[in-house]
Length: 191
Image (tube, rainbow, N blue to C red; front, side, top):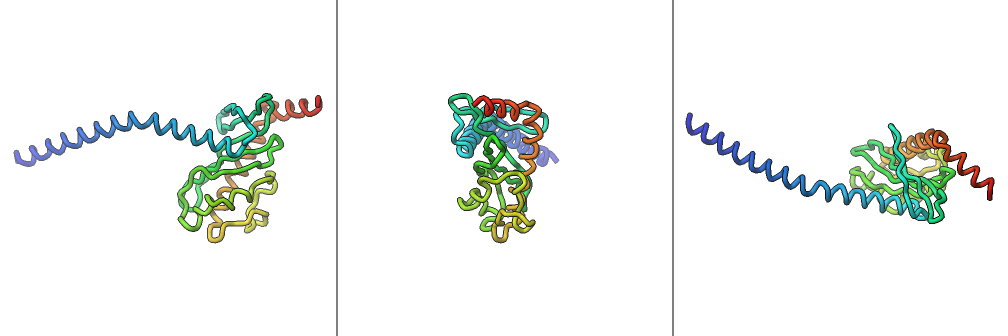
């Protein structure tokens, strides 16, 4: 019996030391990981809305987005992350839209879809399918729309399309509340 107690105490000591080391490493690496994620998101925003020099974050209870402004402090567009669960993972897309909410550019920033099928959404020929589209045009060809599905990965294509559509609808509902459309139209009138 003493033998089993001794083994149990040794195992307890080993697991305590191991968990303490893991906790210490997590405390050291967590800020680095968060900083890298922040930098990657910032780079993705610059890629999808290159005219913007400054991005102002706007957070509401159910949605957050960034207002992109140029050096003259004029709004050149908006960026946001569209996210939805696809075939085998959550697919996150950084989206840049013009002030009239036409899609400027998208970039898939996170996915773990099936390699060779859904993961093809990372290929350079996928993102341009969305450029210049408005909300009403966001529909996959299998659903009667104009966006051609990735061969063998209709679910992933539909996921990206629907996540962008849902996020764009949220943005459209938020913007009038903040009078951004009214400010824009007032600026256009004064020109």
